[in-house]
Length: 559
Ligand code: MFK
Image (cartoon, rainbow, N blue to C red; front, top):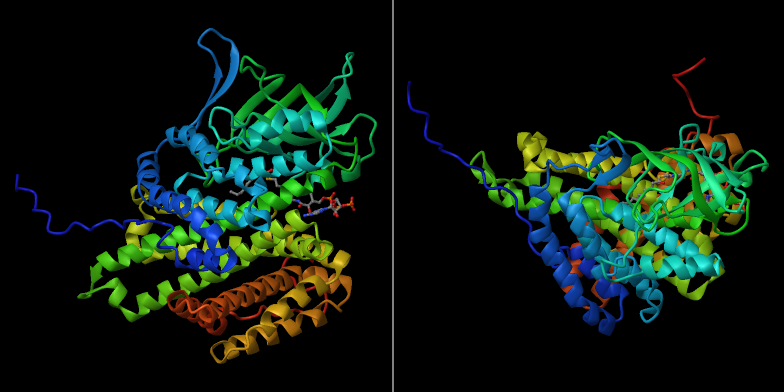
């Protein structure tokens, strides 16, 4: 047999560096948003997170690639046990999340309105190397918010010290059990029933169809107290601790783990509640309204995750472009490839600014309790969740393409980026569900909270260098009120186009604002880069979706 040909070519894989220092956009935002002393105090933690995320954690993630959580339903001796074995990285991620205060920092009093910016900047760096551990953290954050505000002292005293713990052994995560077979997005159809037993203890019976992070120590869930009316107002919000002190599930069966397209390290389960003990968090009705603080926070985490994954894809593609040679040149030296990477960077920069502005607003609302900020945040949350999710899917797809065939090969670790990103536009409300949510928010408050904020931001772009951005953003902004004058059926059919336009406009305004502030501060390096990204976004990516004003939209489906 002839000898095998010697290997003439081995491609160097992409590498990551310090993911904080290399994220110019995040650095620019933090320098502009945080008081100097506060940023200096945080810098070491950001730096350490950036180093671990691009180093040790990323290597662990690649080594863990083929592991998945496993459900063991029976003991060898016939006992029903329903134990979930987590992947090695997930087992460790809990302690890291506690140690870096990825939930607790958001509730710190000392940074005042900046607590959320600090928390989410840390999460930004943690998320891409930890296999969607951000999901339980998102729900934990939502549970902490609800229990902090609900006025149920007993539950708050029991759970909050764990949800906000900074040591792994004390730290609890929370589930959010909302989705049922009949319901999906329409939670009003929830079939789980709550009944009081002979001792007056509430017990829940029903099937929860999609419960993420099923290993959490507590969960918030919806059920209909017996005798309550149909619809979402007849639901109540309950607190559940799935395990007893011996670690056994309390009247809960794990029916199976979901076989998902992505986020496969995340143990998403189908549960049967068979009289599971539960405690009402507040009243015995209006459960959907009661759980919405959690929904709004998980949507915020969703947007942060979208940005963090975009950034990861760009970091890998950029590293590769400096190594890979084809047609006699490195990819980075080829004009079309450079342009492709720049477009991805501009999309990322815009998504990141919109998201970080929303996070800043969240911090102000929680700190100052200002009504105007809260109306603005109600508009921003669905808008930015839906826009960033769609941009993250597009960016992940483009990332794979930047690697050519290697991007399609599983053991590069790259395809996981695309599969994971796809969840972002589905979970926590699809694009359409969130567009309709935005319409409800606009019906309640009007467009003014958003319009006035954006107008004020655009007015600050009074510099020669940002004149073009001022003109484009102003034109986009001023056409919005006209759209909202249309009849309800036209508005509903156009809800997605309106939502995407609001997203793009917000993103452009916030990115332009960052460019302006960085330049005004004399931060030449960040200022120039941000300005180039804003101009690129405005000129090449900022095409407004048309609004169909002729009726309820056109249809090629149905009669
Ligand atoms: C890594 C990051 C990712 C994190 C992942 C975490 C994984 C979590 C796993 C899951 O649990 S996924 C489940 C996600 N499910 C959803 O996101 C549900 C999507 N459906 C909706 O959002 C619907 O719009 C909704 C269920 C809220 C509709 O409910 P209703 O009851 O049919 O509608 P209605 O009447 O509009 O809302 C009821 C009340 O809530 C109203 O208040 P009032 O009773 O005072 O009138 C609304 O104003 C209020 N409300 C609704 N959405 C709100 C809100 N309030 C504030 N913010 C909102 N977003």
